Image (tube, rainbow, N blue to C red):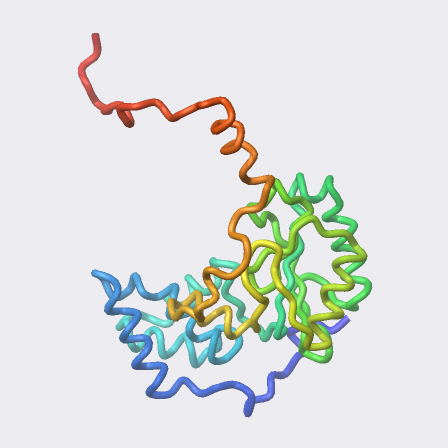
Length: 237
């Protein structure tokens, strides 16, 4: 297996955090009443340029927000969406939480890990695919579920998972099951930083399994209670 700790990124392939990035960080900060609230999308912006949260990215975020590098690093190490090591062009997450595991998630993970020759948070030698064992993708009604650069691939099997990574590595166009075409890791990170790519309306946003309750309500004429939420803190009788 190739541990991403051993992967040395090509320095020439890492885009510099130049004046353009500084200007975009200022644009992000302007969206918030408090500057430090912009840190999360700023870290995604760093990943969109350099592939992961680099020491340079931590330093720049701290400088622009006038906070310490330790404060930036604390955030970058708390959330698993921020990577401190290089990841693949396509970051694949396999859900192995309870329902997905029961429905086949564990089998998908074992098979895909062996097929790619990498484990959790590791990247293939060609740099194309990295693999993450995800605790929950919040899509239990489509279990077992995978994500590629945070886009859903529903109702997977070991065979379909292998086919998926083969197509990604071959450079073929892949469309998520509930969402747009799969873009690269850096492109996805730019969207998460708040710079849309125009693909938000592509694909199906909600699949049949998610709409069963709504369809039952329509068929039976069910509606939500009127009057809204009860006021809290009233006097007791």
